[in-house]
Image 1 (tube, rainbow, N blue to C red):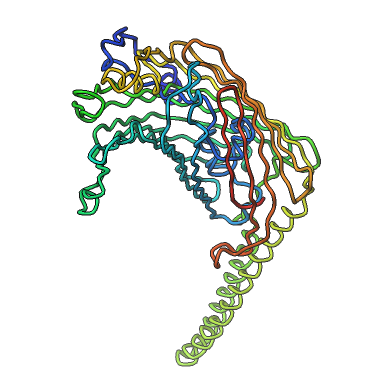
Image 2: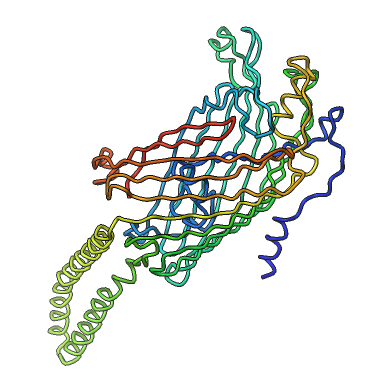
Length: 489
């Protein structure tokens, strides 16, 4: 309880404001890394970000750390794993109000967003890592000898969890890390040809903090509850200094700051398809067959020992022991074949159980995301726009304070299967708060998945059925479109 209290306390802790961040003292400002729009895998985005209560698969780790320990109903083996990788080129961010500060015009040149993740399950235990990265040019080169300046923002979750009570309760904890890197690269083709065009890191800021998540999913009940606490993360520069691309020198921010988050969600499913089927542990199912084989072996050993004790002549006893040992090799081989056949039959039964469930359902997901304050902070766009104006590279801009109040983002998502085993659709909506004291804006999201044909992926995924899908997120001064490819379940 003391450890849990310390984690929760860290989540709601904020360092006292020193009231030092001003336009004249830009180096005393932190950068608020709060992200309003949902940038996530297609399914999460299509549901308006309301995924903390569903919490299945490696993609859900960012919504609920406990997802790492949840065994999906299509997981049929004691050891299983899940991988994810996606890439997007959201050119639609150009000219939009991405950070919802009420102004457009910040240009995200060559914007690239990608995610990488993996999780492994061993019975009730799970371990996983999920990271996403945003990369874009802060100020592209204006001449052949002018270096390009790129910014990379990365967020990573590394968690370990366990399911309890037969999978009805899952809990996990780990770390959430954030990093901001600014690099320069000489764009001259002549320089690149002689191998001197590599990127140079000008600024690197990294921080990490704890997170903990939980999920309640009672067997065969039509509802789930999920919650995650994430502590605030502050990252400071590894070294003092700057570079001359934005001015002389570049004004280094005091830190990057990711506020604490409290994510609470509930899921309700209507229809004949169960949302919380009990996961069948292969080891428990195979235990009866293994126990029977062990009993047969013990009985056999006892009978053999009794028979050998009844032979008084040592030479005859030795010969009989050799005969029994030779017979035992064939018996053991047959018992192993029997155990392998039992494992295969039980796995086929688990697969048939999953395949025979009805597909019709409507899943309703409700969520509230609460984000804490960011003291002495400004928005990322505001910081770099103001930096550019100080260097005489743009029009004068107002330095906008960010994260002075706690933010609330209610979310709603609905998912169904209007064409059973062929088409899944989802819609969602969420309120994106403004971190700058302005008006919140409402987003509407839409997504779908279409079932494709089986493909073994050159033998790596036997008889895997694939899907292709799309997703849209629309709001005033913002739009995002994406496609996805993955396994059909």
